[in-house]
Image (tube, rainbow, N blue to C red; front, side):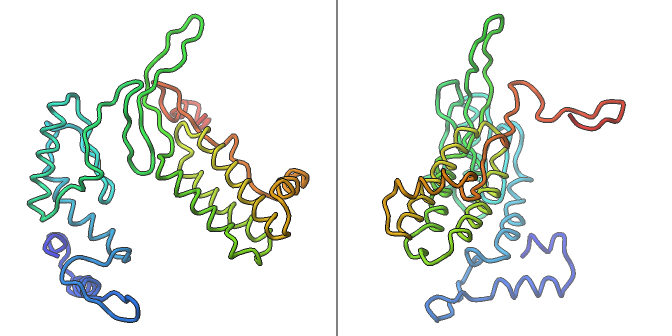
Length: 266
């Protein structure tokens, strides 16, 4: 609240924020009021997180590398191992001043190199890769990105939930529509990058789960369920994820600038 009061002086707004912070959490029919912090999943938690960690943003200095933060996920890009170690030490000190500490399971130093480890950030896995050499051209090293293992597992879990045995009474058309809604949103987020292979995997998984759902619904074998999908002509309306991935070329801008004739973006 002291961080909020640096910019906000409206008493009614401050009172509203304090009311949010005092609100309890309903657990098994009982209201629990934590002494500190905000309720996990509460509507105000992301806002207060950004307000609180803004002090960390202001205290950072470029000598420790390029600092990136989105909500409670932070990434520091450094030029050497020594700079990375100094950045981690500096980050630990700054967080301690705020009464926080890095999460050990998610905090590590990784060397980005072609064929080496990558780093997960905001659902994407980022890794340096070497492009294939073609006659007359040499391969180049560039930073590729695709959905992380956690993001892929989350997609599978959602699709499995929508096609579980407990929903066998639901119409197939409804289940397909729900899967399509999820796939559109998921693919819309991960379309920026080198995600074509991951999209193929998730699409095949959706087809498999839908085939199993149909087979169980009619008490038939899995092969019969696949036949119903492939013989329908349009995969029972299940959307395709082919052709929607935007994979930027190595060392090229993601989007072309508008030309002087005003024809817009290419």
